[in-house]
Picture 1: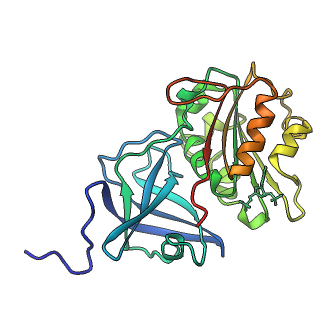
Picture 2: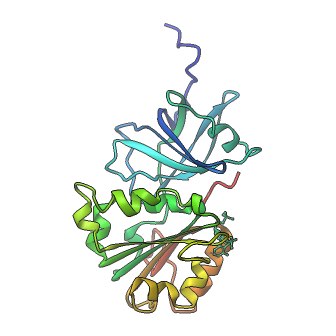
Picture 3: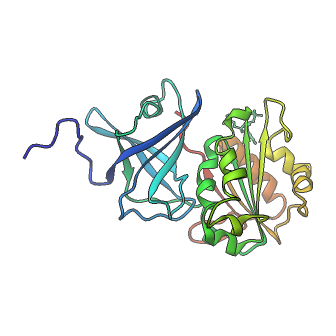
Length: 267
Ligand code: A2P
């Protein structure tokens, strides 16, 4: 029997999944959900190659999973760039469309790549929030840490994606609520508009303001563990700040006191 004409042939490294939901936060930022192959396994914090078939070929980029591993669907957060090869197309996906999801998720933002500690800092700028949305809904994380700080820095208030989910829905969540209430500290900051917490997370940590605002002791390699996911500039500045305080980078082979991943797609 012939395959229906509108269904592209999916290359073997990918599953073809169906878009189930889209949400546009701003003219530069959107999220979508899709079905998940029951065979796809991943750990909170990992990314997969995702994208679209374009002119018979896969056009894919690395995207961190926003959804936690226990979610039966997958969710992603993406920027929209009008002339970006992938995002100029991906931003138009509609419910029912097919997206490519790579079968081999990977990445370094994993709890097991960090040495034991008391406070876990998840520091993201822009779409670098994505892997942390998965991690803050992973029950395991709360067993390893006394406090989990999610710091998200964006230019404008409307770019604080998932703000209501984090601050309102999660603490009220049927299963996760009790576990994360009082443990998960959300620390949004905005750089180019008035907002209660203004400035880059680098500046807020350097000055000690972030710790004072959160009622936490000053950043120290003895008690704090850090995951970074931002632009190259943000990652480099945070690395310098952490290494000056004695933090060492962890990897999939050797755990350390911080780990880092680029917020991938910029086009
Ligand atoms: P700023 O407005 O001061 O540049 P972008 O939208 O360019 O990806 O940036 C997302 C957020 O990351 C912005 O609030 C931006 O602040 C911030 N940012 C950019 N570069 C750095 C850096 N080197 N360290 C910390 N934050 C940064």
